[in-house]
Image (cartoon, rainbow, N blue to C red; front, side):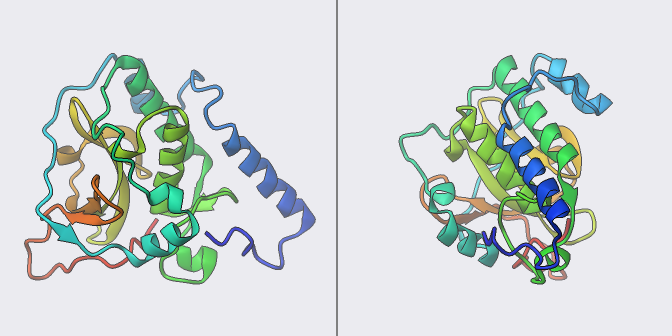
Length: 231
């Protein structure tokens, strides 16, 4: 990520604001027990466990998103697959609380902005260190925070979907012993993948630094997204 590419017109006051936001996010895992600000998400935090769901299988290789490729060149550790890690997370009440709180915390504190507005390019994957970002930036930060909390990165896969607007959108798929769940910046409720209303296109592989198809493209009027260029 080009963290140095903050706008040249940024004032010292703005830099201080950005630094404070980055510092706030840097202590991401402290205070996870704070009260939720969303009623539905708050209910999830105190709930024991969600109902079990079915995992979604892959059907072969898929072409990576170009923004992801460039991101991996800058942050190779974020994309590397450790085969010693488990492919699923044992879903306990404590893990569920961590998932729901991190999802809500990031959604609350990051301002949505498109990559075109933010960076002047259609699709740029990175961390929202200045407090702003679009869909994939939210999910990448969530995964980093969850990995720092001890959850296996291999079970947390960046995933591309077609959203309710018919556009490419990035979510974070959490593969658990109860099935596959989705962390999304459009809602602070964590949903089973089949209840999101999205068409699931592809996700990061759990076996290599690559992507696999989820078989979601069935309509001839919808093409496989090459970017995740919405908020």
